[in-house]
Amino acid sequence: MLDLILLIVFGVILHRLAVQKGESPGKWIMRMVFSYLVLAFTLVGISMFYMGTDVFIDPDKIKQVVPFMTICLAGLIGIFLILRYKLTGMDDVEYYDEDPKDTELPKKDFSHFR
Image 1: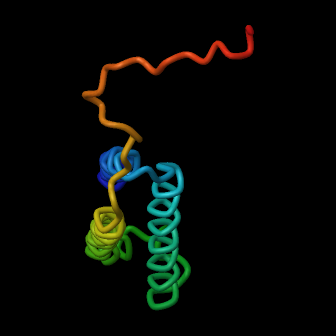
Image 2: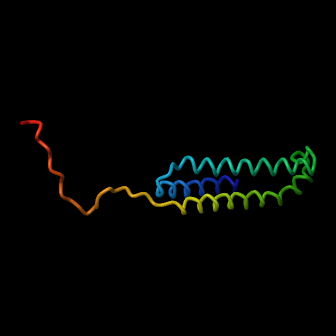
Image 3: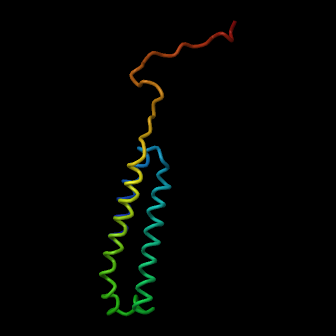
């Protein structure tokens, strides 16, 4: 449950940062979600390989797997920090081509009415 809350919070932070940098926010959020899913399924596979296929059925083995959940949370935080580092290294987007303080209206060209 905590991992889903962290995914949402980190997704909102990455979304805001990606918009600020002029990147597609969906791309960065999907990178984080897919990286986390790969990490989670890898840890599940490793735990099933070492502890047997009934690792999630037997209550005693579930107690042995619980400490590995912190590795998954640490991996999620690491994925977020890597993606945030990549985004902060990019240049900010300039939304104004001209000086925003320039309030003079452009002159209209009425030469086609002659």
